[in-house]
Length: 178
Image 1 (cartoon, rainbow, N blue to C red):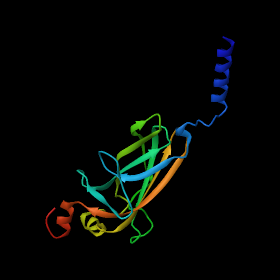
Image 2 (image 1 turned 120 degrees about the horizontal axis):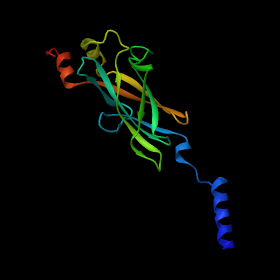
Image 3 (image 1 turned 135 degrees about the vertical axis):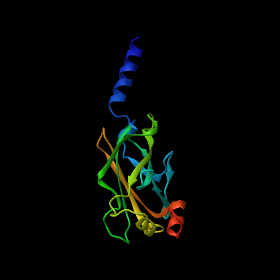
Image 4 (image 1 turned 90 degrees about the vertical axis):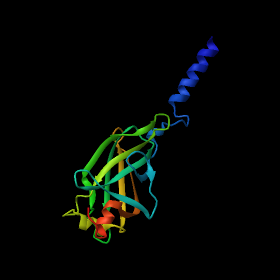
């Protein structure tokens, strides 16, 4: 009995003394930027980023992300900048903040995904079909910051993308009707 009690005390002491086992939710966060309204689709350099013509008449891009080493509640900030136009983001920015719970979250690995965050193209005044047509094919920088609201740890990643108008908008850009 004494051996069992001693073994239990040694086991508890080693677990509390930092025996190399760490909580993955406290490790350095990781982030992969993507797009998608129903899942995570990673974006690589030069990939197209669809500008979506929403049902209320505006445009947005769908942001998704894979996030690691975080608790489930996060804050998401993003900016979409077109270097040919200038340094002011055409979408996102400090006033656009989303608080979300990660989907497909795994508590053991502290990893999950963000889906369907709509980043409104509204910093680009006036926003209209003619201006959207002018963005089609332009290179842009899509920067995303995710902050763990529990630990206040944050990570930022950016990817260079190529903006793409929808097929319906492209028909209008080519002289068709909208």
